[in-house]
Structures are given as structure tokens and as C-alpha cells.
Length: 344
Image (tube, rainbow, N blue to C red):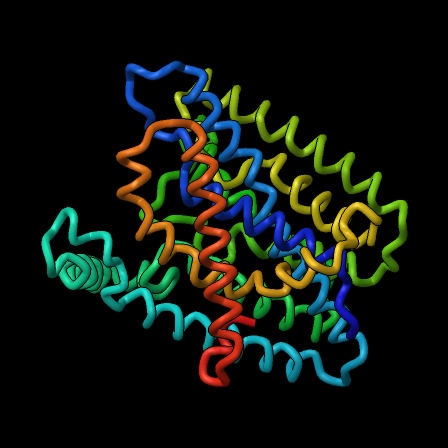
């Protein structure tokens, strides 16, 4: 199927938001700094929370378009699952290596080896986390995507769409009650991070699948912007109430309103609006998978600078540099047949 330029451009916007989450601008600012920085940190972090839901929805959408023309849902899904497993395994190996050269400032000449060794020791003590997010925290997305794909494939093959909807909603609610809503009277406390696994990704993936049964149209842009805006309003309103009444940490991955953000973002990208039709940006957007995989290398390498520099231009520059270094690295790696399969 032909690529949709607006989707590729929106992927670039979304991966920039992911990098903003992981570089944590203004988060943990010194106590002597203005409260404005603290609020700005929360604002940037939570505004960026549309990104991962968007990636789940768009993944479900393209899976849905692929199985339309296939005689076997299972064969399409197995092929995709194999690729996800390959990418997850490859990046888990990469992040187990002593790549963080900047750690020599803290641990001496053997700093990178020391850090890699300590990380592996810690992960070996927690095999569940190792299986669910690999050797680096952001790789959880790939395993969550695998769960979403597996659940959806099984129930769509059996034509149990209503059951699929019910299960995805139930998983999302369990995820919320064990995370953002855990301190409320309805909250549950379990020794597992429900951000991992099937809890949050499935409902977005399933929604993308159902979107694939409709034909995108220009009107999706205004509808998507509306859903995205309403989602942000609900998202921040929930956070305010949770923080005010229950002392919940304002840095949350998902609340109820996040669902609308993910759907709205996907509809905007699929609308093919002229605002997102830029071939140059679209070409960079095609590299999103590789940028997602590699960006934490540069987040870690540049982290000491972030600790040293408190000026606000650096906080934005940190995001830009990680994106730039990641994109250039992926462009280089895409030239090799040995690395192309894990970055594009």
C-alpha cells in the first residue's frame, strides 16, 4: 500500500514528542528556580502524551488495512510479530552494550562498562521487567504492541469484534486503576507496571483497526483536532483533580482523556491535510522506527550536559540534538543491509 505523506509527517511530530518525554525538560529543576519551570515541565511532558497512543492507533490502522486483502489474518499477524520480535531483540542487545561514553565523567575510564554491567545485574534480578521492556525502558512499546496484535488477531480471526472491544476497554480500566487512579478509593495496588503488557496499548490498536474499516476524508482533520483538543482538556482536568485530591504524581502516561488524544491525533494524520503534506519532513518521518529505537543512546550520552546546564534554551536544544543525532544515525545505518531491517 502507498504511504500517506501526512502520516509520515505526523510520525515525525510524534517522535519529537516522545523525545521530549524522555529528555524531561524542566523536570526536577532546582528548588531555587521559578515554579514556572516546574509547571512548564509538567505541561510539556503531558502535552506530549498523545504520541505513543498515536503510534498504537496508527499501527492498528495499517494492520487493519493489510488484513482486508488477506485470506488469513494469522499469516499477516505472524509476519508482523516476527519483525517486532526481531527489532525488540536487536535493540535489547544494543542497549546491553557499553555505549554510554559520557559515563566516564562519573565512573572513570571504564564508566560505560560499569554502567552496562550494573544495568544487566539489576535486570537479571527482575526477569519480568526484562521480558516486558527489554534492556531499555522505551522498548516496552514493542512488547505492548505484540500483545495488542496477538489479542486483536485472535479475536478478529474468530469474528469476535464485540468481545475484542470489551476486553480492550477492561484492560485499559485495569491499567488506569493500577496507575494514575491507584491512590483513589477505586484504585488497585499490584506489583506490576501496567504501562507494560496489554493494558494500555490494546484499546488504541483496536481503535485503529476499526478506523481502517472507514475511508479517511478531509473532514477527519477538523474532527481529529477537536478530539485531540477535548482529550487534552480531559487529560489535564483529570490530572488536576487527581493531584489536588489524592496527591497523584502529575507525570502520568495515561488517564481517561488520553484515549481521545490518541484517536484525534491519528485522525488528523490520516486526513491528508495540506498542513501535513511535506515530502521532506515525510522522508524523515519514514525513519521514525529507527529514531525510536536509537534515540535513548543520545539521551543518555547528552544527559551530563543536561545536568550541568540549567538555561531554558538548552532544555529545548536537548530535544533537538537528540532528534538530529538520531535521524542522522538512522540515515547512515539504513545504508547497510545488516541494520536496515531494525530501523525502517
